[in-house]
Length: 555
Image (cartoon, rainbow, N blue to C red; front, side, top):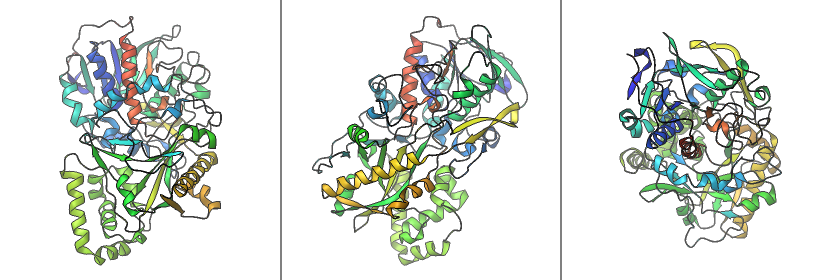
């Protein structure tokens, strides 16, 4: 059932209240409904993004070089950030859950096996093919400590509104409430039990009783709410000042090298390919033992095009794509704003040089553009990207690596107030030299493996002594909002336990990347949804939340 906050005077009391209708909230609500439980699914936005909802996410960012504006990194609408998501599905690795003395503070309160079993459910939810993410290549030389067996899979349905809105709306067990922003949580001061939440829009606020509440509002918004709760109830969340909002992580990514293949035909293994009617792609990854041996943080590499904005690449089709992206009203229809900005690059723009690249081979550019548009927007399945082939076998090498949790990287409540009377966040997100040095060591390990196996070699884009600085110059995130309400076994070192329940509060759970104690090499969306299914199974076994008869809100 769908109701709108502006049309109601109260909301139904259900077994579970899930706040946030992004990938995590949708998956959790549907899984709980399948278990026969009633769910109130609350979304701050409407069916589609709008500027007033985006304004609620704006924050004070201390370093705009390292962190994207939150209003373009998150999305308040049914489907959440899947509106901006590219569709890459990658699970975390076994190495992320093991003991790593050189990566302190990254241990999880459960094992890899406990979450890996939920990967098929997450793959089915996204529609990205099987839950199998390893496939050994045929006829490929051994690369020693490097593997190309690991896959990333891509969902053709990146916007989850398209896939799940009608299913949620028509569910008899789920009440979808749109246009309602959570502005406060009420706790019993003695028991630490959540009694109600306050929902607000620009015209009214209502207090909604809840039995069990799950915040699935995205990393930063979930953290902002918990910072407010910690300020309001300091005796219930004693670790608030030292843990909540701290250890903010994302990923460290960019390009500092090109890979040159001895056999230019080797690129066939690294382009997008169809498996089980869905696109997949191979990456270079480092085995668990090698990571430990060389004290390298987890990382993945994939073959890529040169940066679009560097006209020195000489490619007419890359320049044509850059020009389309550089025109905002066109580029925003092709890619999310964050991805568009990253491809457009910094000013000043060298438009004349891009036009020259196009005019050198106009017919080839037109043919390539037509093929690209057909594969990307008209084919089924849609190809998630493209790779311009190099006759010499030389390609850009993109890395996507783990960032260590550090207390000095954090978010906190600001003195500024957002609409609806809630405090904004201030964001102080930063990287360390340890993050960058690990990236450089990983490149050196990959280079040795390629050379030893005679597959190829790396060509660095800067002298070796400058590589760490180059990594830090490119380091930027803000889209993968991890670690600020981290999991832990000990309430003094974290915010939630292994079942995502707040330490010290028996009916409040957090479900977002903010609970991750480590960032791994994988983007977090797939694991967040796997956690949603794991959490639904846990909640479904609770005996203190009996299924209730669905009630209707007064209109």
